[in-house]
Length: 268
Image 1: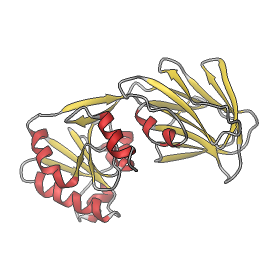
Image 2: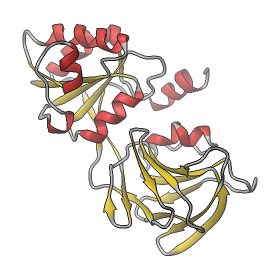
Image 3: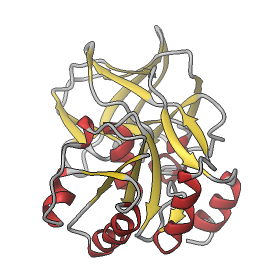
């Protein structure tokens, strides 16, 4: 089996966990390292987007896992070396046992919907969690128009708009007051960030539709995709969000979505 490893080498806990995983796998498996991590370990590496691995091990926190899902179509196992790690399946101190299970084929692959993001027809990065359009200046609100296909849903003054998948419903969208949506449901969630009108509420749309975010009056904004990539908008663009044909593939050993919520979100 061919494993890929990605981690942020500037985070000591992630670098140390990567060394341990590498030592465990190298004697019996092919292991590919992402370029930055490889340099930190004085090894040869390659960009994650070019990596042809059976399974990519994303070692770190949720940001590292989201980046791996964004840049790779491989199956991804999240190994938590940080604090929250909601998307991670195992902790770094228990990784050995689970790597043995993967080698035996004793695991499941859970597919999650991704959002396809286009700006005036130009495709951007797909999102496993969310795409956010927000103000480019602190303490400035914008007047957003939300459309479902060709129908106006709402015009709202707010700091920004979050358009999330069910996977992302437990992340930024939830912190802005959005609902928790079971990841087995294909849906698109639109949540305003600090809306000026208190009556404004999040919307849950069918995944078969296209959600459009536009500004009523053109003003500079930022589009941020999964917290990994950002693009400056003039404010005249049409940001369209639809279901991607690409699915995120997470390596799983158990079905425990609601246990994760109880353990990792309810007691923070």
